[in-house]
Figure 1 (cartoon, rainbow, N blue to C red):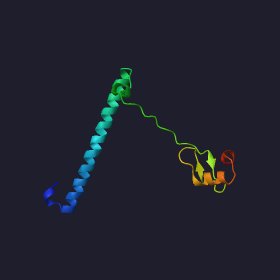
Figure 2: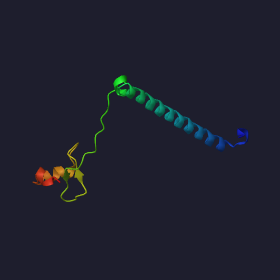
Figure 3: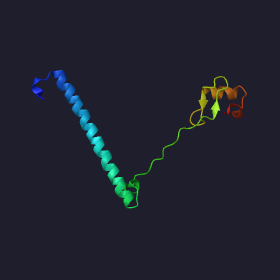
Figure 4: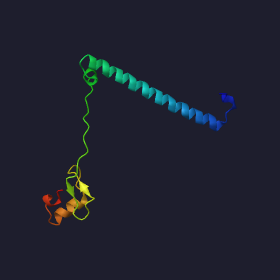
Length: 102
């Protein structure tokens, strides 16, 4: 490839492609190294997190809906976080929490 024959736009496109290829290559190499280290740690009876002292983060499963708006069943709430307006309005209107439960 003769880069001297390329236009400015073609050179910038090539530069962008090269930058992406470098990042992709580095990511692949890091994943390979991590997998190799995990395999070696496992072979010795440890996890990589135990050896490095990094805490294992537990991923939470998405919360399932526990309450539904009686006026619009598509509006639901899991009971986590801030109460939706429709939930507060229903309670003020005299409904109980059990009435809103799914």
